[in-house]
Length: 324
Image (cartoon, rainbow, N blue to C red; front, top):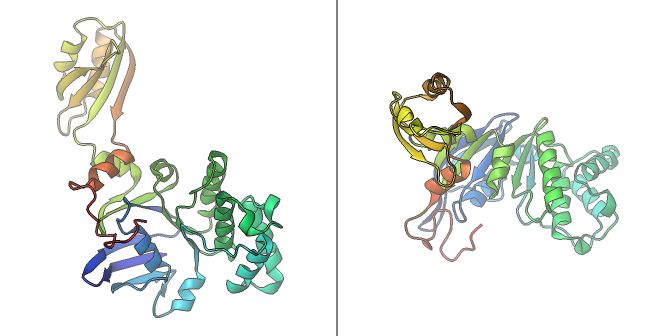
């Protein structure tokens, strides 16, 4: 549904996005991650047609974004990070105005507005003036406007920013529901949100893609040598020596403050979990934990995007530009 090929965006001699390619398949939720200044917002603005690339090609739902601009834009619902609303309008008035802009048929507009209001939990404020709403409610008004015309492609930039915990949970549930009828590209700084929602992740740093895959595959790829957590109830003194003697075990470290718990370092390619279980049975240990340790998405993100010289602008941030 979204195809980005060799996208590059330059500001004079400065390169904000440097020759990136990725796709989002129908029905997928893909998370776009990166530190401030990595180029996420620039990529989103190019995909939604607000910013032309210096070079490269974008297709949305089969339409070339620049040769068939109107057709492509009709297929997109876009929620920017900073939602531009008309503060003097009431919520209902604004959504009616947006429905006309999105070419929703006149006799279908009331149903479309009612559906968006219900989905985005705006029933209590639909008659209220937008300028009097909290940031969280304004965010939800922006999301309601993005889904009015039931677009097959949704691009959401920080959709839960400014929401309270209860609202965040509700919006996450809504995103899952929307994924049943739309393809989603989601930019967020909230890593647990990505792990909960996204089928696939694209990590940007300094304007380049530094990793791509499912949250699980990225964790496995960047975790290094496998580690196992092993806990034995009322462990005998010789238990660490028994573990060290198992083929495929490189080292055994005691977990601080937890008697009978060890971190077992496995050799490259080795999978000694079954042998550890058999040893526990043979020695009549009460084995209460035997679990692999995987790198979290946060671990992967920090490892891939930590810069040696903090404070140096990234490729996705123009000199003097406020990070986004």
